[in-house]
Image 1 (cartoon, rainbow, N blue to C red):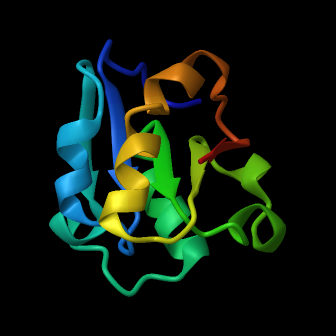
Image 2: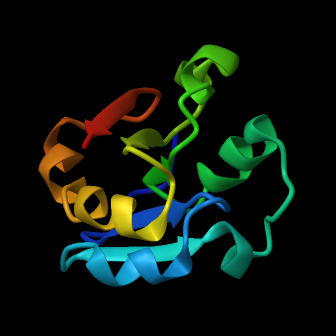
Length: 115
């Protein structure tokens, strides 16, 4: 069983996401990037395994994660941003919507935020 989580939501931004996107996350979300955490170049499985112990949600643009990984094995939710491109400008509006999916985000599952 996982330790109790704080009232703050802990979010990890995948390594392909620009760190500047953190400033567009809503209040109440504590975010780090994969690079800030020192987990660059980890495989998806390794990253999910590490992240589940410190974070509630992994935000990524990698649409393949739900198909490549058995997410039910991990104690965190995955939020996938699907924009026209992975550019900073295209992702900013989607990052601001992360709070809208928090009530339905469940560990072991994936949610999609579309542009």
